[in-house]
Length: 228
Image (tube, rainbow, N blue to C red; front, side, top):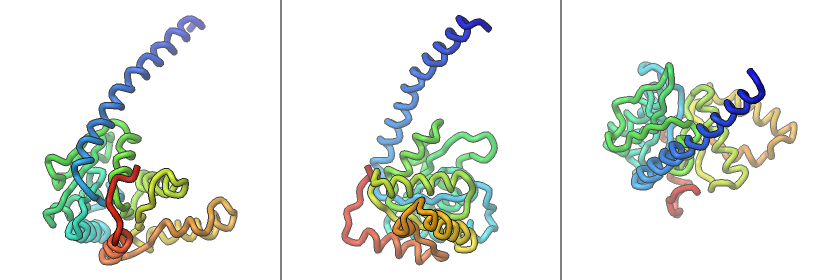
């Protein structure tokens, strides 16, 4: 291929990238318009691969029920596994059940426990992630994979750098998360790559009661509003 052909191909890519901005803006507008009407919510994250008979699936259902009964909506990524359990618990408590869905080749399909008017589809991960952070009053993080870690550490980073206001970030499952927190404490803090007080941004619990207690205590006397 000649230099001229390379140049033409590069210009075509730039043109396609420019037009993609309209689709991106459309996803932001649709997300903002729908999410701004819902009210205070808590996001639940975790593995799409968790089966219904797993203890953390059942615990997620219970956590979501209690969150809904406390007056918060529940937001998940809309798919199976832990996400389904979160929506299932909210639906069982007749609470607000939101699904921020994204098309993935293997794992993702919308679960049936999302309120029909609160199921929102996204093509872009980064737009979807903005919705989680902007409209959540807390993150409840169940055992999960890379996607769960991605959401967890992005939220911690945004709070640590004061890009968003602080909100509760709750890890559920000492047996799963304990090793990660030990590494953060014993390696990251000791190497000086984070400050000891950064550990205060995360809470580790094992029960639904603790989750709701932390969220209610944090917001006692505070106004609830979008995070940025």
